[in-house]
Length: 297
Image (cartoon, rainbow, N blue to C red; front, side):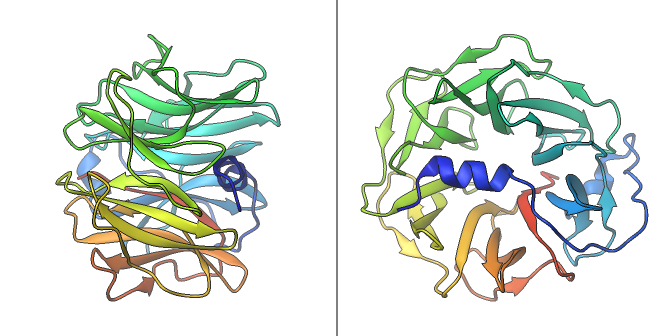
């Protein structure tokens, strides 16, 4: 059985890709409405994972970062003006960074030697960033202010991949070493288990109305996308194929779910209706594209 940390580590590692050649140009940071209908994602170009934007039809590919190491896990601020992301400093040190939505004003918020921080996510009101931290083989959920201040561990439980509820009152997360999904109050109190399966349940994602949670479930090399009510009841399978489907992410209006799928040996971005119908490949090139995030506008 593949454990949660295996998924976290693999999705942070460099993967090769073939993308259209040529330089990318950032969005105008004074016009954040230009991110409407766009997604951010990480992929490799010229051999190095970086963060890109593109429209939902696969056009307007735009490279935002240019780092000698790896950048990934993009997460939009609620107003679309900034993007938080992780940067690979070395094999033992990962940091959380923020930048403007056009790729400018990159600022490092965390980066303690020997600590691996990843998977940042903004609270709905934009006042807090939650993220995953691995230190001394412990897997923890941390929160901080958008400027990096006020860093503190959330509760005393182990977990990763936090996701805020739409009203900001709770977070969903995955436990380790066995992959199960829990929810916890925003102050770290009252954790409650939602899933209890023999296979791994990971990467929870709240629907915009807060009524349901999408997640990936399954065994090594054969995870699929599932949906359940926010109390853990009524689980149903949305994808059903012989591939490995990862990390669902909702569109801002709740009508679509984007996810990653390993097909023909490549990780690509796919899109489907929230009921699992009308699935299609979103990226029109041969790619390894990971860690997709919707523009919130």
